[in-house]
Each structure stands twice: as C-alpha cells, then as structure tokens.
Image (cartoon, rainbow, N blue to C red; front, side):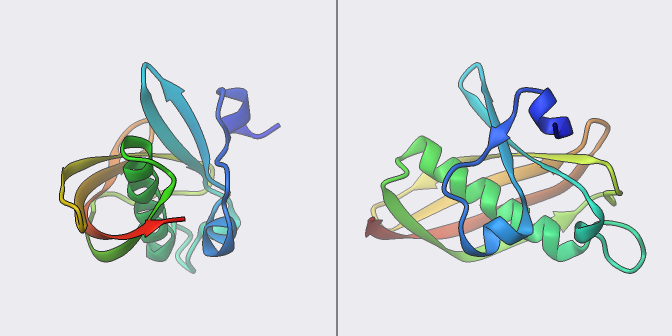
Amino acid sequence: MSKLASLGYTLCEDMQGFSAIAGPYYEKTELGVVTRALEITEQHLNPQGVVHGGVSLAMMDFVIYRAIGDELTHDKQFATIQLNTNFLAAVKLGDVVYGRGRIQRSTRSVIFAEGELYTETRSTMQGTGIWKVLGSK
C-alpha cells in the first residue's frame, strides 16, 4: 500500500498521456476541498537528487487544471495558455507533495487560476495562470 493510500487518498481518475507518466497523482476531498498529491520516487529526481523542476511544473499544471474542473465541470475542456511559477523550496526523495488550486476569475473564454504545492513542512511552489476554454468533451 502506498503512503498516500494509507492516508485516505485515491488515484486520480482519468489520468492519461503525460499525466499518467508524470504521476501517479492521488486526491482526497475533505470539507469540500480537494487536495492532490504525489509521492516522490526516484523517477521524479534530477541528477542532484532533488525533484526535477519539470515534475513540479507538470504537477502545478495538473493541480490547477483539475481544480478548474472541480469548480466548473469536468465536462469542459481547458488548455493552459500561460503558467507562471515560483520555485520556493527543494523537494526530496520520499517527500509527499500536496497541491491545491482555485479559480481567481473566469470569463466565457478564459479562466484565471492559481495554485500552491507544498510538503508537510514547507511551501515548494506557487503558480498562477490562464486557461482557454475549448468547449465540452
């Protein structure tokens, strides 16, 4: 059993393509708030032994994208058109990275959203971005 499963997290549904490779991502809903998580393994590390920046960027995009769907609907499709991030702290082997996102503002055609990645002890990344509404699935 994974560390996350023992904490009540379940595998995120409908992970396909790159998200399936970058993860596996887990999720848990408590008091109406969805938290996504990734348990760091050797596949997520760079040559210096810390999490590769691309792993954090991919998780931030995944976390915010899914949060948009949580708030609006998962029946719509969205595409990232801008993602701004700040790396705040290194993540190491065995850490669990948690992430939450939320919509800041939305129009008919674009969505402005933000997210945060963190471990049990520190914030590791902050991000904001813009997603284009593509239509329904």
